[in-house]
Length: 515
Image (cartoon, rainbow, N blue to C red; front, side):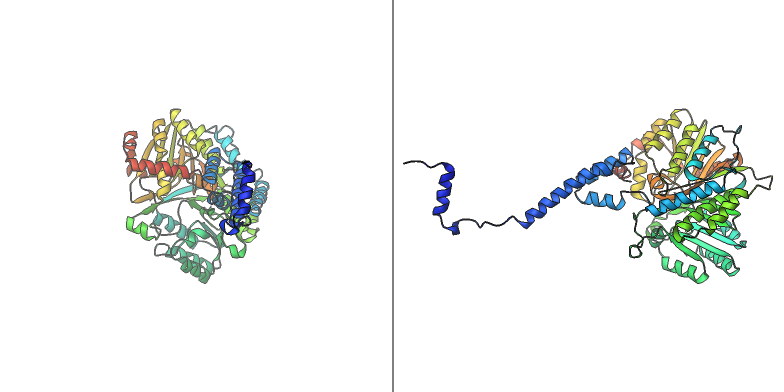
């Protein structure tokens, strides 16, 4: 018998068998087509990510995002599309550049001459701040330090009660409660006297806390002209990365007195049940300024007001004051410079300021911050300062209010301790919310900016750099009071912490790079 080739044999067999014994011949499956499309789309996203993600981004952040995109199909790219870009919308960034140019032109020739002054390095740092944030270093200011929520509120209320023309309030969080009721009363009385009261508050943050509707109703009833900052209102066409925040905290009265620092307008418990159950209380600090620097603070307010309303009138007045206001008191001896920062700028103004000061310092550095989650550059600057032989101290919270951030912060302690940084832990249940840096007992920075990647990349912040031994002494006295309540963390204590805590620290550290 002649054997047929295999292919011919199968063909003959197929012809001999009835069709009912063969599986149906379907057209290409829709599911297969969809799956192929998903695979192709996923591959396209991964390839596109190699081009998009690393651009103008820290290598550590880029690598973290690329890992997320490649290890978590579709969810990773979706997360990057939602929160991958730290930039504000183009229109707001263009408005910032426009206003910065107006400030530079309006303050031309007003900067303090630092030639022959100490420390010698301050001139270059002031030049850096001017180039990045537009504001010049101005002399002839005076300032006082206020510590604690009740002292801060009492001082601000007294100035609002004395206001005759304008009150400009800008706070990350403002909430009507028993503690802040007198502040709201003062605003209402000012409006009743004919004072123009303008108020800005971060939209998303205020929505998250109890009493938002009661707060806004009270402001409306009093006649306060208020606006939400960085509103997230998709139905009104206001859409952006949802976790960008305006974190600034300042009050300007009549254009002549300015308050700024870490204080929000809310009870020290932040009115949240979990905080109250844990007994958490925020510890804050504010500085009150008089002199030309107040016009710079008002310029920051005017910039944010313009961004939310399109009204440039207040900016014009602030420019005029900055250029023509001169000191008239013998006790006004502080050189001050406002440093605005945030996603409206192309670089991290506050981070560059801190790094520049740390590398320029010659003797001592004392840092007080609730959140210390540095990028590579700041970690190198702090550890290098200690390794150069400087006395470097870090005052932070023993217990944080945000678990992930606190564990990420803890993950950096070993590198700091091994470099020689002394770490002091402020006791629970208090949250040391003050943000201070003092260098060589003469240059200080106070403001709203934390020492973490969020404050560098995602939050609009405002800081004031001050050259004054007397002001630095006031801040150092406050820091000494904080230190007296702390316990010092040693390397031996840190290495003995439970393995579960070590795991939490390491995992939290990984998330800090996703900015």
